[in-house]
Image (cartoon, rainbow, N blue to C red; front, top):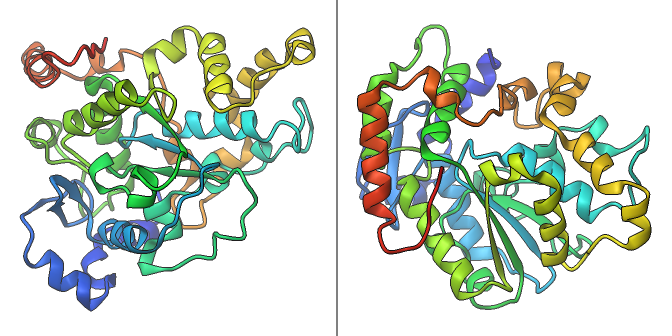
Length: 331
């Protein structure tokens, strides 16, 4: 169970935001949240109040560079694994692999690759990120429509989007939010949050709209946006980390291939290895969440253990309808 302090932070989000954001959210459509008391619809997507404040601060102040790299996901779509992989990939000169002192051995990936709206611009902060060395590596759950304009049209930065089957995404999100709920709150009933998920009411949802925006972007701008599928990466991780390296302009050299660096990197960043590290078993993020909350199973098809045939049929029908004509297929 995550700390009570962490849970209270989520539950008291409306109390923590500044006056201007309180004024804004009072005008927005509102629904009950899965963890925070409420979610608010802004630019077509649902946000907790504090994350919405961070998003708007990011929109107002963030200036992208051509060399920036953004890791983008919906919550519980493999974010932790993607952060570990790309951090290791892009920093392999400064932090060789294998190494007994690699940062991933002593830091959770979420502390190494910060979220824009959840970490850097949280609480309406204006962080000094201009002094960070290039290439800068950031993470976000922000939908494409809400990204800062300098990311969308003012630079040639790289966007890496990781998508996961909606059924596994839902089950993972249900487990995660239940971990963070206090004993007094009790666990969310799976049926109740399932209906909300299917209606698009989840953190950064609707899931399908979020995914489709970035899928279309990757087709329109394949040099600027790369679309990855979690299931494909689990099946052929070596193939996709090499694709990532090419996309990010840091391909593996013949010498690195000969030394087995790809295999070493995948071992370092594997779910089994990361979840067994002491920092991820007993440590906490700087924001208070326990690191072990981000490591449950990481399996493909775990939804089969939780969803009824009727639930499966409902999600599959929504997915087929939402993605019709797009060319996107998820398994």
